[in-house]
Every structure is written in structure tokens, then in C-alpha cells.
Length: 246
Image 1: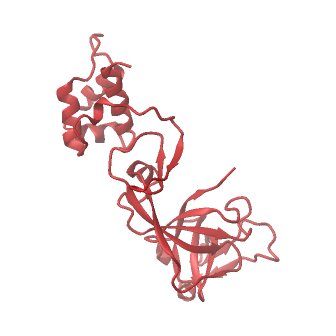
Image 2: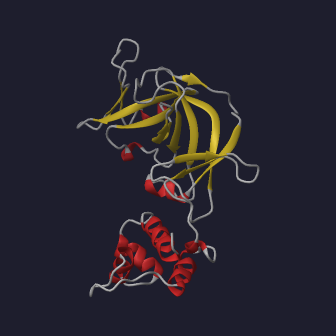
């Protein structure tokens, strides 16, 4: 692959980290029309065009990338999720492309959220960290600095196939207010020192139904909470991503 193609591929990877192509153009200080030409490889008059060294260095400077980052390409599959364990950086998750930014540490708590009737945890669970790429966090609408994010495991089968027993979950503890419940999303609660994991369904009367995805309602009955009883559950955060093994 020639240098022009490598730079173009890296530019496409960077564009995918922004909300729109125009946002990327603004970030690197170039007209959106010029970015489109580089992306297509042709000018409006049909003449071929590729990214030069000056433009490549400008992108690196604008986005805080290392000098020469645009000139090398790691061959990683479009949908590959890889984990690497080294003494320097520990475990990390990389989705689709190499990271253009420093890896972000996220705390991993040795605690479990019961997707059922509750799981009692130790008062001081052991903690270590796992690191994620900024690209992974941004693509899942999570804080790109990792603030408020926690990794934890679920236990029991009350969430059925949605969140199987032992599933590793990425929880955003910034989403923990009664008024900010997102309908039909899964949350973790701490009720009397027991962690429970339930789907939240909002009612028109202002109450919220906490339900399990398991259809066995005798074992896993629905629970209704209101603003007055919300404090008894101590919302821990919203489950934003799950890692399951097929």
C-alpha cells in the first residue's frame, strides 16, 4: 500500500471518531469539501488527489498525534475486538482501528450485580483497572476520560439471555438520578448491601417498574419504585455495554 493510501485509511479511521465529517474538518482546520476530495481520491474536475506530507503533519498537530502517525498503518479487521496483556499497559480493548489517543483506565471491581434477587458483596472489594481506547468509549457514547465508569460482573439468570450469569458489564455510574431514567434500559442498584440488576420501565404515573428479562416471574417478580421509595434502592449506574462469550 502506497503512502497516500495509508494516510487516507488513517484519515477515514479518525473521521469515524467524530460525529460528522464536518466536525473532523473543523478539528483539523480544513474545508469539508477538501476532506471529501481526499476521501474520494479525486478533485471536482476529475483529477486524482492524495494527502501530502504537510496536510498529514497538520492533522497530527491538530489532534495531538505523534509525528508520523498518519504514515503507518496497522492491519486490524473492521470489527475485531482484541485484548492485550503487557506489563506496560495491562488489558485493553481495541475496536476496529488502532488508537490515536492514550489508553483510558477503567476501574474493575471484584463485585457482582445480581440480575435477580440480590448479591451481597464485601464492604471493600478488590480493585484493579482495565484500559480502553478513546475510540471504543466515544463510539458507545461513554465518557472518553473514563470518569464514572466501572467494570463488574452479573450473577444469576434473571436477565435471561440478555445478560447471562457471569457477564462482564461496563456500568456508567454518572447515570444514577431518578429523573434521568432512560426507558427500557438496564440499571444496577444497591439495595441493603445487595447488588441487583434490572430493566427499568417508566410508567405514565411517574413510577418505574424494575423487571427481569427472565419470564419466570414467580422467581423474579417485577418491582415498582416511586420517587419516595427510590432512595431504598441506591441506584449504582446504568449498564452501557456487556461482554459476553459466545
